[in-house]
Length: 303
View 1 (tube, one colour):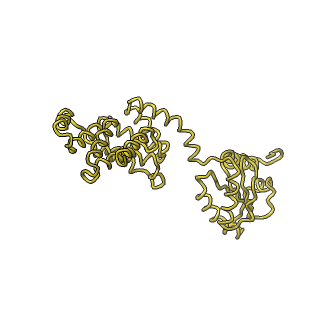
View 2 (tube, one colour):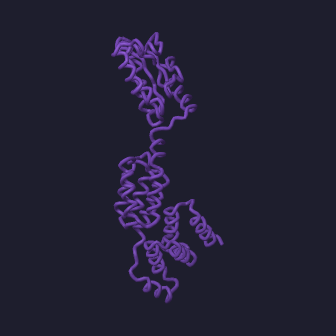
View 3 (cartoon, rainbow, N blue to C red):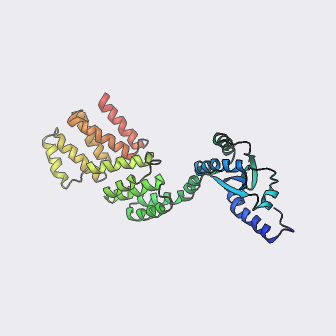
């Protein structure tokens, strides 16, 4: 926009326009609404545009308004001859004239077409890309066994992205790794309805449920002695499986549960199978280890 020969007020208006509209349009789609107080159709259109801006905020859409009486220089730059005039602006350029659309449905239809053609990342997507490396670092720290340090990193991420499913799941797993089952569950319960059904969060919730039922065992030797005396002592084997799970030995725990199923498939209302399936969900149904164990379970049930 040329500013040569303009008044100081006009130059200031153009600088404000660049700052408040052009710069945001570098990464977002700006709905630019030219209006005036005396314009009846403008007043009818305003609530429609405001509602749409809220509905499309997560898709990187912003609403900006230009009062043609107060910012005549801006209206002149855009050659606005009548109002309301509504443009879609991306990276400083008009990409569509939305003026013919007067109903919510019409505007949304045009926006949907525009958004499919432009490389616009939603705020959530942009944030996810920004924090992805930090999440990966926290996961590495947790995998190394330093749950306390991993918790610190995930807690800091929660300040930035409090409803990010990956961050919430990571923080909950750091709590579980420290034996803080109630705190892990509290993290999951804080998830909004939009993310509560995320597969990663559901996996951690299964791990929480498993942790509540898999009680630590003080004396494995006693249980092993009971089983040596009576291999069909399923109570002892089930308790042993729980202790092994609490100790982090999922291979031995799965062996014990499969042994119960092999010996008495329906024992205690399918308790062994239920816990084994719970373990699968906690580990992750797509995990290669789970795939191998499911094949073993099928062989026991249908072999």
